[in-house]
Length: 306
Image (cartoon, rainbow, N blue to C red; front, side, top):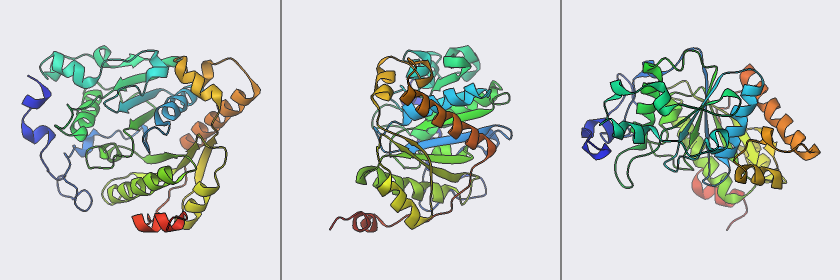
């Protein structure tokens, strides 16, 4: 059996959640509400493709582990490199493992698809359906289902979903069903802010029927934050961290390392401290934002395009 042989109702059917809708126009696969953990703090990290979400997520996971939390990071991109710097390799995806057992989940053990990374961070790569087929929401749903079946969320303090690019379709918005807070990674440019505006719309739609709330913006790969801050002020959002475009961050990726494993330097220490500050702040609880996104055309006009 392959992913294409799975009953259509499991991965492409436009079903709605029991007893409730899932945002206007949503046609994604729905997941049981009891999949969510009641104890664990769950964050979903979104942002424009190539903005550094995986680097941000992995270093945030490492920072959480540094302050004594048990962390699970779930990569939700078919590229399956979210946990690369934590594990030092491309680990097999949940879909790869499921295909190997003809999708008989009862044959799987946690060690088949959960891999330990830096400082004890648990790492899972969900993977994705074949191009042009299936639904990313199904893949994420199966991953969370396995984690729950094997009781892996019960003793976990923090879960971080690292979500594919700026795709905000129903499928890839599915981590918002499980998350307590959604964080957006953006740089100080038009494309990132435009994507951020669209992601805010997706989070707003999900928050009507799920517990997820917007937890703020992480400025990344940016010397300045003036455009991000101006946009945030206009819609009622705030920046919760700032990571500049430093060569040491780029080199950490090339060295398959988190920033906490790199050769010490004053600028690196500043970045590490910002991650530790962010982790501590998120653990204590962040302000939530019920801001309304702009219309697409209004974003162009607001940022100076004619």
